Amino acid sequence: MALWAMRTVYLLALAQALAACGIMSVVLLGGILGATMAPTPGLATLAPTLAIVGLAIATIPAALAMQRWGRKPVMIGAALFASLASLLAGWGVAHGEFALLCLGCCGVGMHNAIVQQYRFAATEWVPPEAAGRAVSTIMLGTLAAVFLSRQAALWSEHWWPGHPHAGSFLSLALLFLATASLLLWLPSQAPAHAAVAADTSPLRSLRELTAQPALRVAVAGSIVAWVVMSFIMTATPVSMHNVDGHDFAATTNVIQFHLLAMFIPALFGGWVLAQLGIRRMMLGGSAAMALCIAIATVGGHDVLHYTWALVLLGIGWNWLFVASTALLTTTYRPAERFRVQALNEFITFGAQAASSLFAGAALFSYGWQWLNLLMLPLLVLMVGVSWSIPLKPAHRDGHAPR
Image (cartoon, rainbow, N blue to C red; front, side, top):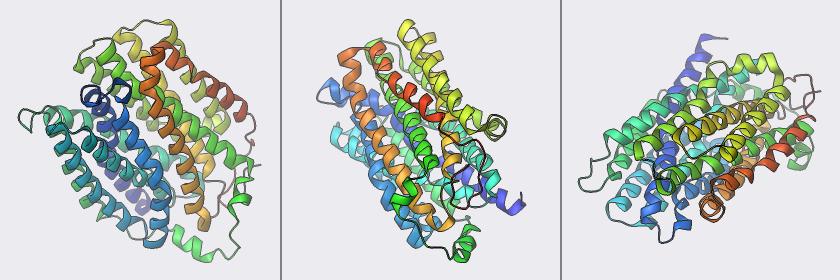
């Protein structure tokens, strides 16, 4: 792989390390703050849910904006927007305005629609066979964000005197400013632009694109990975801290272990994908998530039970998500990439937003065990869908693998 290509991928991974702190901070703090600020317990997870809603509604506009103006200016502008949204959320926490907290978190989520495009941007700088490695490298940046987001939240917790956690959003605003500064070094155009210019074949309609079995499987895998992970993870801080009475440090430790499990596999994700193939990697991810549900259902409510369940949830998400992303890149030609990526992101994060919205209500209505069991049918469905994946890999020419 050319040195200049990997330098760009590493730059994007570093930007990811800063930008991904946004959604992680919202997940970590949104439910805990919502449990004390929300007018009813059922709305405790509204702030992190609105972050996912913001992500979902911004996916198509984000892809269209990048198609028109390029990835670099849109990424920079989105980071600046997220900085302002973080300040708004901090102001809401300091003044007890739950609506402002939710609005700010929604803005951070909208920025995350751009952050999710980092992995696609990285694949445009490498050969088709290295797409899995590029995606895993970007996810390593998110691994760094696991440590950075928690430390920044704890370090700046009391920056706003008398208002715990309001300062955490101030530090988040600074991280977004640093992201924008870093992205200034990103090259303006990727090699994929030359491929787009050279491709004279007619663009296929969305109906033709979605008729590909591989694309359907890729989207299904992405949906299941995010929905199951988000539904369980969003409810975890509330279940631990507000229902079971575990302290804030224990709760953040469990979330940190979960996030580490989500992104540490990125260290060798490309190798695992090459060894197992897409189908087996999807099946492995589904199995890990099923084990998470088993532990949460038959285990107790100790910190150890939460920890093991969330670790398995993170590993399962990683395998299923990486395999689905790698499969998706085989289903479109260069000129079709924005349309397919936008479709995948919109459907995936729309479904994730719906699942996150009901996480708090499901927790208080049915309890921790049943909340987990509600996700089991999706995993059974995913196992069945995984068997329809073609066995042979494909080149990135717009044709599904055979």
